Image 1 (tube, rainbow, N blue to C red):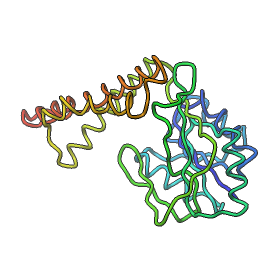
Image 2: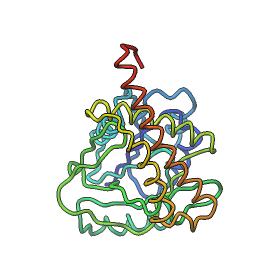
Image 3: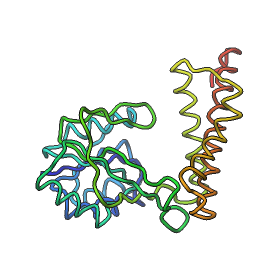
Image 4: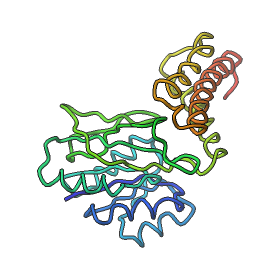
Length: 251
């Protein structure tokens, strides 16, 4: 039996697409909602999902809670803004008939400004399918899968509809950068000028040249520049946080 876990909050624009992509695959769909104020919960319930409320305690904790609710011996984790492609669906069905591993990585592919990216942010392998009890998640911002042994890889993409618009992307970029500054401060990392000057350029080079983002045309340039901006902002926020602490101000 395969159970699916989806975290949600105000995902009425995405949740139906995500759940419908799972209907021929999963025997149980668990939605962990952290207080949606739109139609997310109603839509999920109307499509047969089991919805549970949990106050937000971080990305990893929400997932671990959802996994604890699963009755299946296999668990698939997806986000509300993701969709299982036809090829991936068939790969999962086939593999679960005679699984070779306890843990599998799926390849995420992002839809960006009207088309799927072929190079920037791709391939992006993430642990998403596993036997219950074999994986736990940790991490304050982006969760990390903790498991033993080797993970297999399945064919087919997990489609990712990450941003509604450029405005939405940069609002999220600023938010993530600020959260990351908090995390760096908590981990004892301090502001260094060379990080501010060089790390953003490395992020750009990695996406645009090493990942061949330039082959995605103008969209690849936009992705690489957003990676530059994210890295630049998180160090600026870290500097502001340290300055506020010295001056005895709350940030």
